[in-house]
Length: 388
Image (cartoon, rainbow, N blue to C red; front, side):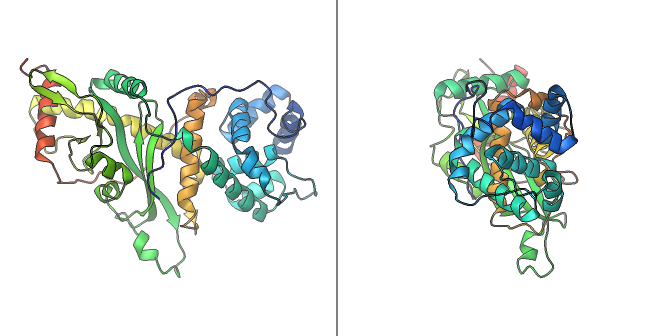
């Protein structure tokens, strides 16, 4: 799957309080009470709301918005879903079920038992939800579309550790899979840690929002190869991305817009990587410290993604490799929706800090000479040693 573009500039999504995302019955507090009872038995409304956020990893406000987003494509289908007692599932029920499947990491049977339905229904409802999020939610995942928005992003990155004119951080993570021994493509997916995995490459803004993603490639591919196959790479190489205002560092010295990445990526005019080697000069050591502190934004974003949407955190048992990229995309869109909604649940969730445990950074020796000179000047500028 190529990079997906969505998301307008950061904004709080507005909607009327008590938005009815189905019938008046579905949008009422009564539905939440019924769901709470189904999950934890009879509880008070306030405790039910707390339980709701811990179970579905989003606030009630964000849940309502997600229902409104997917309502039309999900309810347009003629297929009806029911609980084991024969009661029909409302839109709210279906969204809740899909969110539980994506956020818990539980098996189909586990989620089915949780809701009182069968595993086939869980699979079908989740896939319908994934398709609906992909159809209606891509505007939440998009490269900045205005000069004002990109200026805000640059300012926030500079406030982290001083890197000027920086527009994003690129990183990758592995989505683990347990494949059948009879799978004819099993060796294709074997990565350098002898795990079967699928790569997710992301470019992140300072608010941990995904601005571009690439997924679907085997884990055996290195970071540089995945990057070079991406739409983002092609646009940047052609000067159609990261082509905004250049920043004057000193008389006769300026630097273009760029993103930063670790040593697994090539050093390019629009992609600045850290210096390699030991016993580096003070200016280069200081640059690497600032560079690393900025890159932490992407590491935290990926850790948050996997901590919240735990279906892609553990080892997926014999996944459909054609559908998995779309599941990953849906999780990335949901990650961004929570940020765009300024959801309090986002801040209250704990982070493990790990998204690719056991994987050591790769090293790419590819370095553009012009980019190397630009990095040197940037390092001198940050240390205050660049001649005026």
